Amino acid sequence: MYTLEFDENLCKTCPTCDCLVKCQYMDLSVDEAKEEMIKIINGDDSFVLQDCVTCYGCEEYCKRGNHPFYLITERREEKGILTAPRAITKQWINIGEPRGKFKTGDIKKKILSFGFMPELLELTQGRLFDDLMPSYVFGQEFFCNVVYIHFANTSIIKERLPMVIDNFRKLDVEEVVCMHDECYGSFASLAPAYGMEVPFKPIHYFEYLYNRLRELGDEIGPLNIKVAYQRPCSSRLSSEKHHFVADIMQLVGAELVERRYQNENALCCGDVLGMIYGYDLRNDIQKRNIDDMVEHGAGYCVFNCPACQNALAAKVTKRGIRPIHIIDLCRMAIGEK
Ligand code: SF4
Ligand code: SF4
Image (cartoon, rainbow, N blue to C red):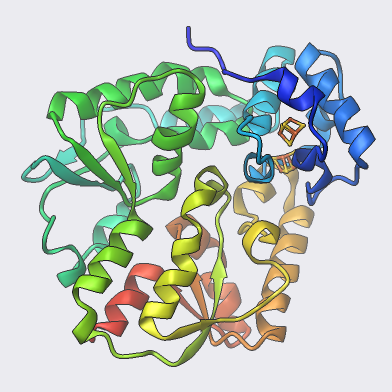
């Protein structure tokens, strides 16, 4: 069985305890944060195990290479602290179950992975992808299963993720461009944290888009628009790739508005959190987030995750902001949209 590699000495000597001090859903001093982390490490009860809303943020706040949110998730599962009713958790787990209905294109050494997000198949069109398509995979067999950390269930990830990795291994691919950053996070962060070997190089699609746009440089027409970026929870697992948002916006001539809920201080779309913890939490997160976009004059809301876009598109539209996926924004810049 895979176990989380977590260095408790890093926490015992941590000068900031940023994991919990920066948490947007709890209010802890450094001393209190350290005390709670030690309790969590020791397997003792901690209110954090009850109050954490699974935003993934502390995976980014910890700059010492530990995995506080994975540890919280482990302890919750060990103690039977459910985040959602069993029926909802089961329903989600069934969605990701392999069913032999996956699709593969003309597989080369480098492929695009759509995980199990059908929206990505539609988004991935045009010249941005014509050097790779139709080398792709799609389906539950290639679904990273990381979403189950929202449900305090790492055992299903430990069971399925090695099988998913093995499915890629069977294709004998060398590079996988992950079109969903949760998939990238699973191969670049979660799998290594559990000692799972990843036999290919995962590439975040932001990095791919950035490089592809540079290749198409002459064809880019500056968009001259003001945008707010909707950062998803999953991007906390690949925070080292977050700078590509600003890099891409610069290339396409879009101004990222300086707003309160951005970068480390971003708010997620609130959708899964609402499903688990109730609509009051979701409504509060979404209202603060969209108010912030409006107050700072964003004309567009740029999405990374299609699930965030499904959750927020109508709501930002009602407030006069146009929703757009980052791929479509890039296609707009090269005259395809
Ligand atoms: S998880 Fe990271 S930030 Fe939190 S106490 Fe440990 S080392 Fe410090
Ligand atoms: S996952 Fe989010 S809510 Fe939970 S402890 Fe970490 S930062 Fe706080």
